[in-house]
Image (cartoon, rainbow, N blue to C red; front, side, top):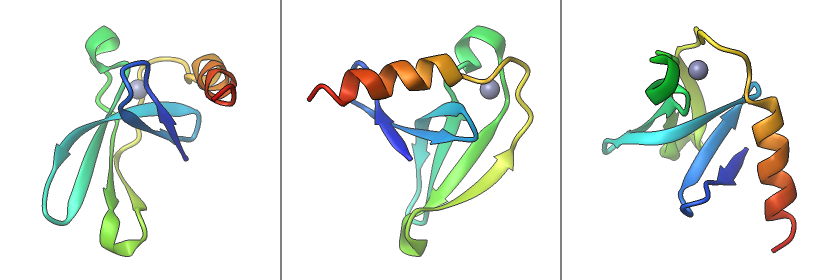
Length: 81
Ligand SMILES: [Zn+2]
């Protein structure tokens, strides 16, 4: 699932956490946890476009609570468009 950030960037939602795009290679797109600047959270995932955007977890260890409230808020905002 994807949501849009307030700046209009696509963000990845997985297991109640929000990730932002970090690095794009020819094969994979890497996403880092949006809490990284705040908590130095090291969780990352990769998606593979050629496999229908299949999600490959790189590191699933978060050092903070899930972004559940934030996700619901985003979805509510975006359903207005
Ligand atoms: Zn995290």
